[in-house]
Length: 241
Image (cartoon, rainbow, N blue to C red; front, top):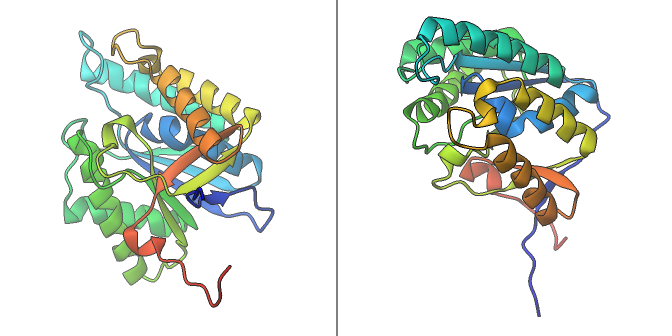
């Protein structure tokens, strides 16, 4: 007998509009990793907010951080428009994102301001220190926001990123269609670094391939997979389903 792993599969919901908040270490992180999911949410009527803690301004060799930071800001605005999202920025520097109480309380203030129902961010482990710092900041910020009276968040999802692969387990699969992927592609292409011109990494090829792989696993054309906290993986049944 062959046993198939169960998938937690999310499909479009026609419920009351929510706010979806995606918090990334750098401009471009959330658009690449869960942008198609965000585009779908916006298309279904949700408010989608992108919060970039840094611009990722040190990523272009031979170009000053000031010049590339201004470029990344413009690109982030274009990417957000492609997804149907709003975009906001933190004030920290690329490569120097601190996992401090001050940073967590600043993000907590944004969570109280936006009152999201769902939050997307980085997984716990990463080869990039800013990604790992963003995860810790968001986890603490959610606690501070809740203590401050904002208990709107019903789901926290960790987006799949090639730099954050250690320990990542695809658990929640978000079903997508070609329209979602096209919006994602337009948003991703708004960033020069995704074109593999100076990074040497073909982001578009990788992440579009990942959407197809996760789609095959979910028995859909496309899907995006996220991890969740171990405590969120406990499913309780009153009887055998």
